[in-house]
Image (cartoon, rainbow, N blue to C red; front, top):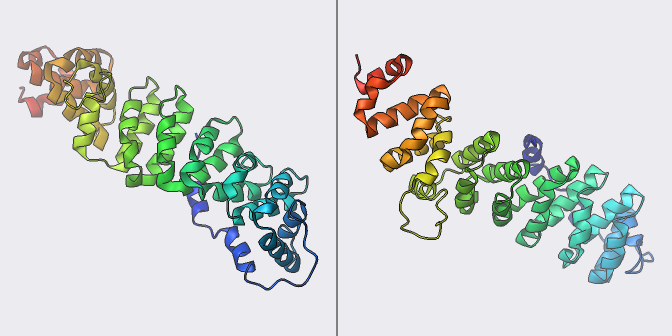
Length: 327
């Protein structure tokens, strides 16, 4: 699981790209500029010498989009400074999206600065790059996953459709990463709520908790959550007036393991509205669930069948005595 605290802190840093943009305002000294197909522009842009960087910016302005092939080739240069200059240059081109494949590859560069700059450059492309970047959350390389996460977090709402799409994969670690990124966006990720609710149906308990926590952070309207919950397992998510079915109950019973949270409360409310259709799943929880699930299931079952109260185990009778007025 990724630790997203360093990603959030990275979002607060001043972008190195701003430094390059500032340099573009400095008049360039008269010097022979590199040709547009040459890697010389990247070499100058990545130099530690301010004068050379200024010459690189002047050459880039003169070459424009014609510098693209040389900059793309420079992304694979053995020298770190040249690769940094290549990403700088691509970010300043009129159409950096033409270097999409190269920038995606740079998210796995050995140099953290190259990865950081590539992530910010791709983030500027928004939804155009989001699907390709989102797929990198499944990379076996941790540095690629972290760079992709930084990029998607900077895209904001433009990344929501791509992240919501990852929730459909049968891959709990990738689904969890997508859910965490959506949760970090808060209400901005509201369009992903239906996909998140469907992802609650997982058998992976840890993923279920991550998704539920994400929904708590986004804070959707309870009416929307109720509607989506009742459709779980129905296969009729596109029918606005589908009947409530027992298929959703097992998933909702698992959410009873989150008492006191918004999603735990919504699961309790939805099960109560289902009534007798939820009874089989509630009885199963009464037999095998956690203490919290057993108590919630017992309370709901006594609402369905008041006579059940007299058959509950003594510990549950004591737990529910205040609500059920048992003596």
